Amino acid sequence: MKFNRRAMTVVVLALLAAPLAANAQPPAKVPRIGVLESRSSSKGLEAFKQGLRERGYVEGKSIVFEYRWANGKVAEFPKLAVELVRLKVDVIFAGSTPAALAARDATNTIPIVFATVADPVGVRLISSLPRPGGNVTGLTTNNIEVVGKRLEILKEISGGKVSRGAMLFNPADASNVLGLRAAEDPARILAMTLRPFPVKGPEDFEGAFSAMASERIESLWVAAGVLTTSHARRIAELAARTRVPTIYGTREFVDAGGLVSYSASFTDNYRRAATYVDKILKGATPRDLPVEQASTFEFVINLKTAKALGLALSPSMLLQATQVID
Image (tube, rainbow, N blue to C red; front, top):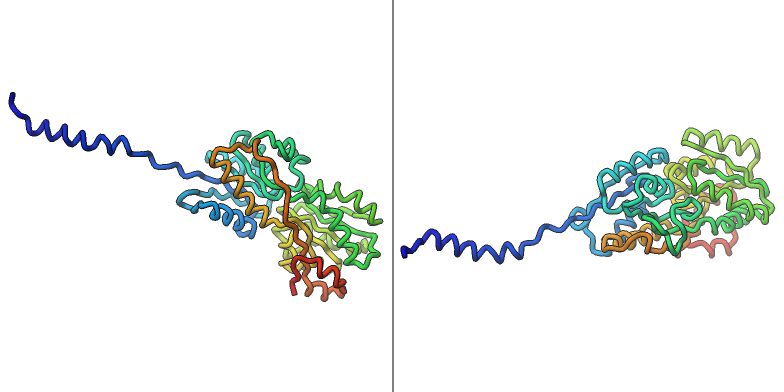
């Protein structure tokens, strides 16, 4: 039999290549996280990304983000949520109540994680905290339970005699509406009226504060939400101009010049939300991940604003504050 050198070479090469082919693995799929937020620059979002980095994720390498920004407009969330669903992202991170509701309405299959929803059961995002029951889970700021504390602080700041209070809120924000309802009993106990002033856009702010001045409102609670937080500085300026003692639903207002805030730590909740995303990417399902309540609360005082308003805050109040901005 004639020896065929070329045929033997082909056989040898094939045998050498076979183990390599058998061991070759397809490149790992990089998970995509859809981010549905009000704006691109926020301490909360950075805390969320930091939480993922702490769990070993590297943006652009082991994880990819698909960002969608509502730019302070609640009405934009539904359209943006649909865009993320069409991209077939692996998880949607929707931090706020309006964002989470829009994501829930857009999909019942893609996992959704929220971070700062005050009452996820009340707005029907989940069935219960221990058993979410669907494709949505995350962390609640538990704001419904801190409403009474806010009003107590507001009354003390105002000298203990305030009776005509007001609440600035967005009626299109479900968390704001629930907060207004939750304030009814605490306000009655404190012998306060709480006149609601709805605002649907930044063009309504000026008129709302003018009406408060006309009605001689003595104190104000500004509900945190996509609309109000996006215009924190403007609202703080109007509150200072009308010289009405004001408490806010998140510290971002106080950083922008507002008087005081009392709330769950939004940045802490955002950071902890990364744990949910990590578990889901590793195979967990939202219905099996109980919703966690806020564990860190912040009472922030802007002392410079207090002095400008002529308010003498008690030493005990200053000691209670988690941070005093001079």
